[in-house]
Image 1 (cartoon, rainbow, N blue to C red):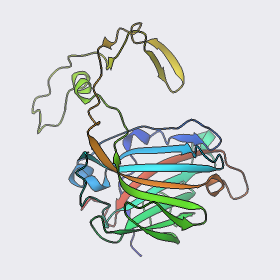
Image 2: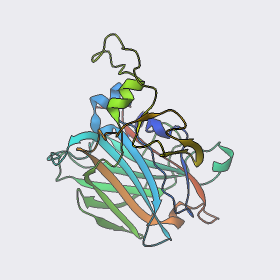
Image 3: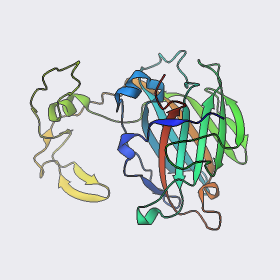
Length: 272
């Protein structure tokens, strides 16, 4: 059995091991695109977002989403699918989360059998991992399905892998005015910052981070101008799994707060 090592331990925005309550009705989300030279070299291994939210039609179910392969021009995803040399994983910790010290005790793994959009994808798990940490081998197979086709794979699990519009809003042009582009190929000499904040549509717009209010855009002297969504014309490849919440609960407990992150990996730990 192949031993996979992560290309990136997780999407960088999720280094806080983002947590979500399986009882909560609030979605949790974040984003990162092209966060290392390795995944820039293989964008099919580049995690852009991880989402978790309750099924809006069934409170006993939860949806997990991992988006990969950023910056596909809208509608131009022909031939773009998962990389068969990459193991895509959701990792879940369902105990010890409140202490801030935990490791995964459940994994869901996806692997494709070939390149291109005619590929078949196999879901392994959810199950306890064979290894914890940076080395990974496949757990028990659950089912196989086709790319770009919503499918049921048994045990109350529904899956989908295919192209979707990038859901993250990001004003990249303004971001580079705050933190200028440090890619030496674009700017051998990094220019100075020319802006102090992101753009906000109005002075009255509230600024709330992690549930804490920081006043309004006006009270924080932010730039008041219509923001522009750089990612609006781009698609991603979305890996979606919907399942009963009970599958992510501790063996002897009920669904509660979990830690959730995603990884991509290859046998040699490098993109190919």
